[in-house]
Amino acid sequence: MRGWVSEAITRIEADFQRSADTHLFRLDVPGIIGVDIYLKDESTHPTGSLKHRLARSLFLYALCNGKLQEGRPVIEASSGSTAVSEAYFARMLGLPFIAVMPKSTARSKIELIEFYGGQCHFVGSAPEMHDAAVALAKTTGGYFMDQFMYAERATDWRGNNNIADSIFTQMAREPHPIPAAIVMSAGTGGTSATLGRYVRYRGYDTELVVVDPENSVFFDSYQSGDKTLTRACSSRIEGIGRPKVEPSFQHDVIDRMIQVPDTASVATILWLETLIGRKAGASTGTNIWGALQVAREMMAAGREGSIVTLMCDSGRRYLDTYYNPDWVAERIGDIRPHLEVLADFTPTR
Image (tube, rainbow, N blue to C red; front, side):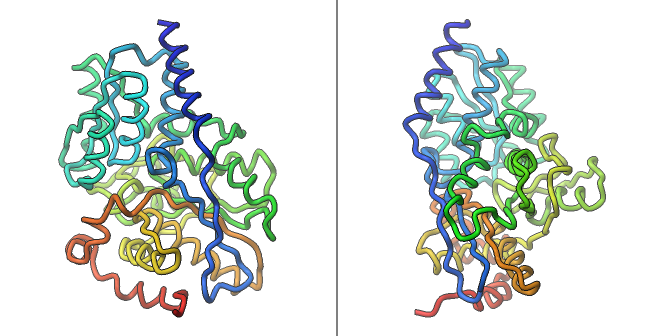
């Protein structure tokens, strides 16, 4: 048993050594003066999203806590990207992998999970995922990875090339090396917990702003302090927003939250494509809409500085959803009012 665990950890660490850090690039946003906005591109990970970091941390955490066994299945409750990344690591270790997800999950993500050898177990909506994953782990003798429980503790928030450490290292030679704000959406809450803890640990004067989509309880819970809130519906922005307050969501390390309309999130990724020539997932739109709001506030207050946010994954996974006008009109709503707002920040050609 110990021999297999040691070999598994070695394989994961070797994979990490073969991987370069993700790029941080500055967005040239017309109309934003004196405030530099940076986008950390997490879509360049081997599995194409920010969740690659989380999956690696979760596997190492589970291995070092004696939870994974050779040949036993790994189960996860995930709407897509975490499952894609965990399927990658499960295949690396020769472990069966089953993802529990809503049946509305983008087909492209399902195909990626299957590409890495994983299986998909579908439920009606996000609130059903946890119990279904627990039941599957029991009937198969597998281990429920439970990203929503362990995300905030699986990552070493003090450094060790976590995302916060990476951001501040890459910002070191910029005009405003210590960001005035980092803007981040929450799925598990693990990344925002890492960012908030790291900022405090290093003593940086950086505000952590967490943005939240509709149909998520995080914003209301943060405003009210009630950690028992629940909703009966799922977020329409894949990968972020939850129907209940997950254990990894740490209120106390967040400086403030902004609620972002889903129509604004989708409009923003279409606008972003005009700016950088690339498609991003809708959670990136949530992040950038929040970053633009913070930038406008700084300009109004006469403040200069920098803001960092994340490109969570590529829009290529969502060509049949967020980049399909008919699907957006039916499932999200009219995005034209937010496109009109973004027109003030659109480059002229």
